[in-house]
Length: 179
Length: 391
Image (tube, rainbow over all chains, first blue to last red; front, side):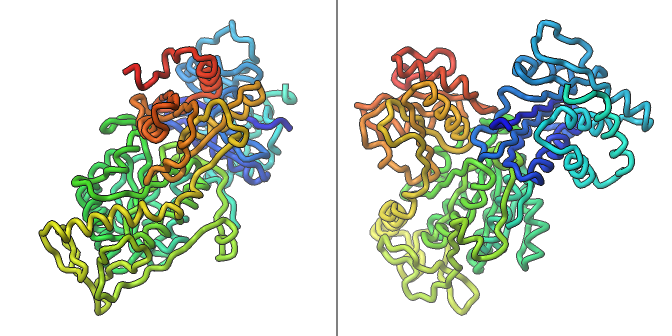
């Protein structure tokens, strides 16, 4: 395993960006890693900008800043445009319901994860988009076992276990392999 | 030992409880609200008391009352609340009342940016109240795990010195999540280096001796003992007085009980790559030091002879680290440069002291390495940095 794995998630308040980072972080703690997860946000509970920066390492972590994410989950156009240039070797997973304009000049891999639409289609409402995105992230994350991530989802989100399991599966099976 | 993915706010709360804190009064403010929230849940579980003040000033007054009643007491806030402590902070210093105060720095001035880190209170924590004639103790952790240990240490020092101790953290520490280990028994606490000093009771007759002595039990009321704890100068016997000679004695005690016991702070720093007399010493405290550590390690790989000095004990200021003529770079989470002024004073005119600051987010590793290179080549720091003399 390489020294550190960096995950960046950003969008606006209410989308579960902090939850998402927390779930990945908790899964990493369960697997015995050292973890940092920074959250930055505006004053608003909903609607403001939010960013989670997760660093996972076998060693103690000095800088908790994500400077070159292995995975960047972009959940708003503003977030996509703010942080897309950080991604050089990693991958951008974006929700096309919000990220409506893709920068073709980027050299990194970019994959759409229509989490919001899939949540509405499958569950009649958008609240499971976050778990769908987590499924997609988990597929691309070498360091964590998918079952540990799922376990953390069910621990951090105490309600709707069946729906969350299904949503995770939907996100996970969008892609073949780590691609 | 239990492991969690939790915030610094959680770690600080658990640290306080391990240190024997049984009273907390606060007023909610981002990014320290979760300490009040956690205390309101945790304190009743361990026989403690939680109160919410009508504002921060009231909260610290409540803590003073609790401490005088024999409790180890704490409050927590951010910059806009810390400034409201000015009145009770001075009272606690003057009457030598042990307290622990957590300040999680966000972006200022005034309300600034709530959910982003800043280091705007370096000097405010040195002078948290008016009047002068005192020294303060301020400790700055750089991670959630360390914030737990430093909170425990703050209680230890506050009891031994009979004075309020400020723990100066920032939003990234208190709001950020990390893997955190919480000790579950005394052996595990010892393994983690936690020192505990029990609350003792001063039974007189010398409540405020005119010496620099420490380890004098604090004044506690309601145990068939006590002393007058007013906002005037206390006499040795615990009465109040408005008189020059008594004031002189007391002021010297407030200053020198701390300045003359620096050995109790001298271990509170961290050095990396400092053994081979580096060409540039990067000085920081709090979360920027984590980026500095990464940047210095990487700069070393690139052949730059750079070292990192992190201050954990900010006040009384550890002049001893700056006795040697050297090049220093001070990295802070503010644009105005605060720590840099103190480093410049301590390092003296023969040293070269540079500053780079930002606020609201940490500097990046790449930015720092670029600045190291420029300083080592003698090039001016454009954009983000400046030399103090140039202003």
